[in-house]
Amino acid sequence: MPDLVALWRRPTVRRVTVSAGVVTLLAVVGCATIQTKERELTFRVVPGTASWYQGLPDGVQEMDLPVSAADGTVQRIHAWWWPAGERAPAVLYLHGARWNLTGQLFRIQELHEFGFSVLAIDYRGFGKSDGDVPSEETVYADAMTAWQRLAELEPDPSRRFIYGHSLGGAVAIDLAARLGDERAKMGAPAPARGLVVESSFTTLADVARELTWSWVPFQLLLTQTFDSVDKIARVRMPVLIAHGADDRYVPSRFSERLYEAAAEPKKLLLVKGATHNNSMRVGNGEYRAALHDFFGVATDGGEEADPPASMRGGVALAVSASSAKPVLKP
Image (tube, rainbow, N blue to C red; front, side, top):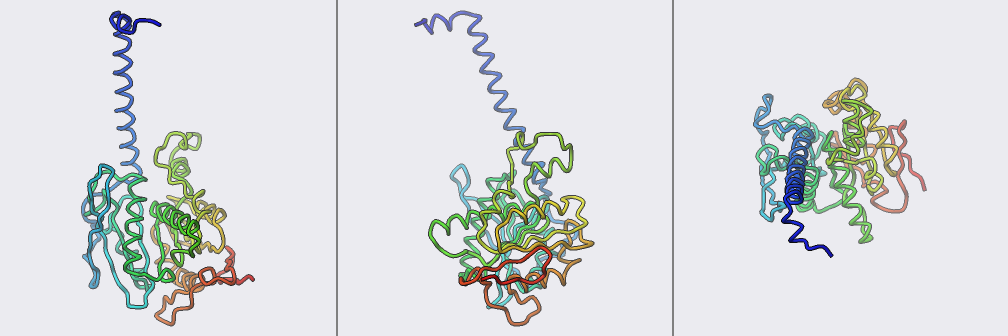
């Protein structure tokens, strides 16, 4: 066995060893820098208040939700709670990249007008929430923390919904899949009445290829994956997938693939003339009809229907992509 001390004393070996250590350190630092830049490009956080924000509507309550950080400290997630009435269904609103809650108010208002009480959060690194650059891991943790708060605000699972727009759709799918896995282990029913995913995508690598070069193996390069197409098959609640048919940023074929991968009961709503951000407004009537016919939500102020069969047991609810109304199957 060689004498390691004597070997280390050789100038050539020492130089090679020190050089290798420096290269390794630089590689680690370089990777960390690259990963930070990747997260910055993924979330593209715009600080401050959106220019079109006109202030909080009457009735919106601001709150902070505690969440444990990786370093063991407790950070705050800023949230809005907008109740819509004692018997109103409640939805957790998960936004996409770039804009904080002040840039999301128009869509939150539409959900409230549909009859939902809305709990909306800013992930850490957005708006008034604590934290620096978000990551896939932190936004998933933030969504789970917000879900636990929604469950306190609305204890009845049949009156709870999850909604995610764009990147928030991937966060919503991950949350619904995790909750479904937990309930399956417990042998318990679905924790929510339904999941709504709007203008989202299959994986972040697919979006990167769409926006840049199709030949780059992004799936091997990205650390932020947001692999929704695999996770959505694990969702154990009715799923409504909506997308603007004229979306040039995230093409609607991504939602069609998500729909194909999702388990029943499910519905696909493609809104003609709508783009990435305005499906609710352009397809207001179609959206209302889908929420009413598929979930039984009374979006016109009328009597709310019973929970879908998937939450009552007895029969399974199936909805085809071409049908606007649910079809009951024994």
